[in-house]
Image (tube, rainbow, N blue to C red; front, side, top):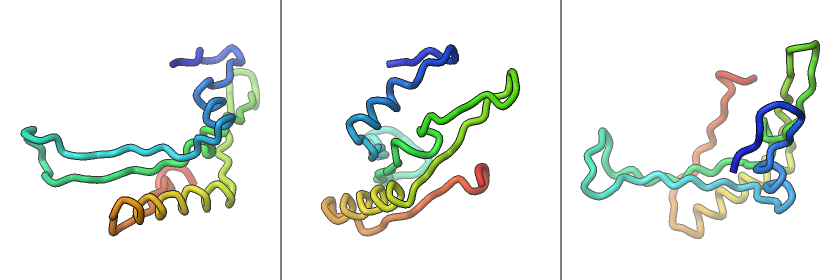
Length: 107
């Protein structure tokens, strides 16, 4: 599913996520049996917040040809996705949860 770039179209993906409260994006990462890899025994689940940050879809034209995108993150959504990650870990026998952010790129 794609959304045309520009021309005032809002993202269909973001609209669906917000409408149906699909805030948690799970991305499993595992080695495939029989496939050589640099690291063996990888078994991770990446949990991403799916409705806020740059997914907020709040943009405006500052001056002609320059668009600014706002990265909105609320305490409510951050707490909700954090609780989801810990609950997921408990339900699935995971022993560790790590928080990762992009402060090196986006302040």
